[in-house]
Amino acid sequence: QSALTQPASVSGSPGQSITISCTGTSNDVGYYDYVSWYQHHPGEAPKLMIYEVSNRPSGVSNRFSGSKSGNTASLTISGLQAEDEADYYCSSYTTTSTYVFGTGTKVTVL
Amino acid sequence: EVQLVESGGGLVQPGGSLRLSCATSRFTFSSSEMNWVRQAPGKGLEWVSYISSSGSTIYYADSVKGRFTISRDNAKNSLFLQMNSLRAEDTAVYYCARVVTGRKFDYWGQGTLVTVSS
Image (cartoon, rainbow over the protein chains, first blue to last red):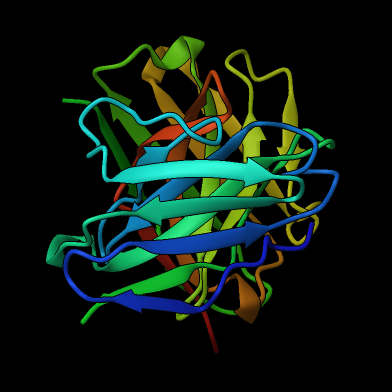
């Protein structure tokens, strides 16, 4: 049950696009399309941003998009805004019917 | 508005026990699959445990297996986590969260802090 690997930090200027990677194994990210992404501001409840690799819940900006190739999933934030500054975590369902989260990425808007 | 409110956190000595609760409202708890997720200070999110809607299926992370027990009371719309043999590395904010179709966590509580220290 090793955590999925994410970059520790990613930064960008307002209006730019950034991409966060999430690398797992053939037993989690590579096996299922059950990859989701969460935005987390310290002290608050995490918020679902993307589910099943590339789907957005209602109310989430279309500036957020997701994709997957092999064992690596990605979250792209386009038109970066100050309010996007937060920690982001990927999550995947696994072949042992458990869940695994990513190591987390701190997004900084310059 | 959907609510999940965790309680029961606090300071406990190594080797001690604590029972967390998660009171829910405004969604159909009895048909919902639930989880506990934690975040240690300065660390990322870690999935802890899952329980099916009926309570018949349960899973744990290896890090807590044999020490933690998840349970639920559908009549009271509540989720629980009994934590025994606590270690310093169990220090974290513990969140309850619902998982739905697509294996996504759609509702989360605000968390309760557990500190294991002498």
